[in-house]
Length: 298
Image (cartoon, rainbow, N blue to C red; front, side, top):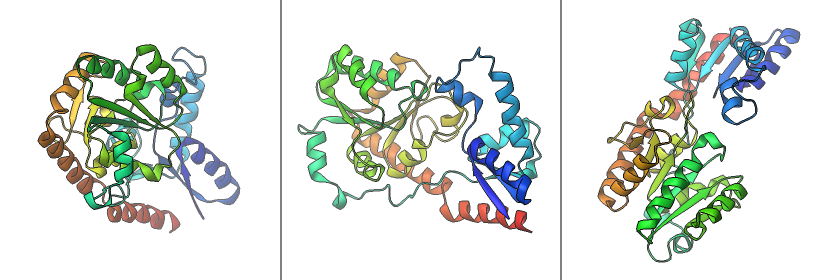
């Protein structure tokens, strides 16, 4: 028997079940445990829980029979932590590449008219709205951009949005934002196709954010923060732009350098799409995961 445990929680349950059944256990490592608890505000960096939870995290990693890392970055971190290289397989998060590339003849023109009734420039952030995702950072930069021009709008696609509605009202920019919390994830490709620039602005983090492969697969131009989980995928000036996390002036400059240059937007988006096709090969990912399954089932 074989149990594929997603994240630390799934791996922990798998280890318990394995003790009863003798099943082999895979820890499918799509993220960290303690660092993400801190990042989301569940615990503070000074909490007494840090040490016991960190020991719990390391225990799960040691007890699992195999670790499946979601990126080369995570694999290298596990090796640096003392795990054998042959215990770790790399299976990158693979988006449905074709599903996220919307061709011109499939664009929802009614949606496009709602988003840009006067042919405005469109920016988009999609995904989680936790503080470490950098949405506050984006709004601070966007406020500076819209002080200089009235032909640009920002789409926030995700949940929960009420805190950012209130923040936008306080900033006086609510009329420039489009809040989307009533659309299914399957509609995101249409929004990415219609918009010009997508943002991956994590302030810190050790893994590749799930939105990044989706952005690249869609062909939208990407502006990201220069942290490990993003800079290992986005090369500044080649398939996107990178700015220091939390540097509002740098983010404003990046937006302004790109928003009026459709040719550069298309170049970066096309390069990002090529990187997605190279990096996120579904056949290679599924083949590697199947190899791990076969090894353990032997």
